[in-house]
Length: 217
Image 1 (cartoon, rainbow, N blue to C red):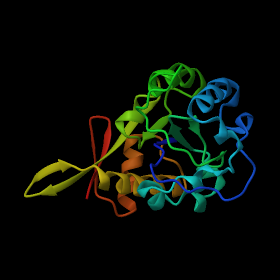
Image 2 (cartoon, one colour):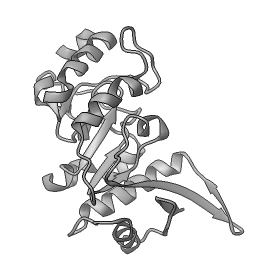
Image 3 (tube, rainbow, N blue to C red):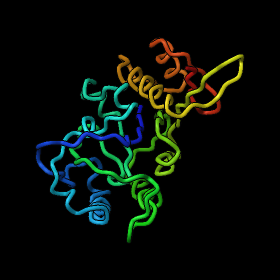
């Protein structure tokens, strides 16, 4: 199982620590050149700023519910966090505080999704039978989608008088809850049914529908 997360708009600013080492980030062989170009286009000074694990830098609602730093290292290795600046990072990759919305067009770079998609298609694992659980917003989901692995998107709905309505802000909290349940499980789910069973065991009300795991809140 692989869990895909968006970054969060809210970020902590590391007060001290070594600067980012592009060669140490996930998939460095395939992504370092593009990361360097993106960094130069956004703000070269970021390369000298203090860096901390991505799990500590991202502080939004999803990350607060997920509590990545408290998860075992083995569980954290199943997580990829998508970013307009870095492409993807793992929770333990050290990055500085930055701001870059996913639809920002950068000089010489263009739209981040189109910029990162070819490199991520080459770099990221995509194996038949692998379960990829997608917690990303639509903007980041457009960066990369597996073609062979089983993709399971996580959505959130409210229900009143038998009528369901999609929610936005609460979706982040629900996705964090689902991600934590899946990553804390003794055995990672191998398919959507297994993911639903684990989520239900964690006290969540969920349903499988059209390639999605729907959380009813």
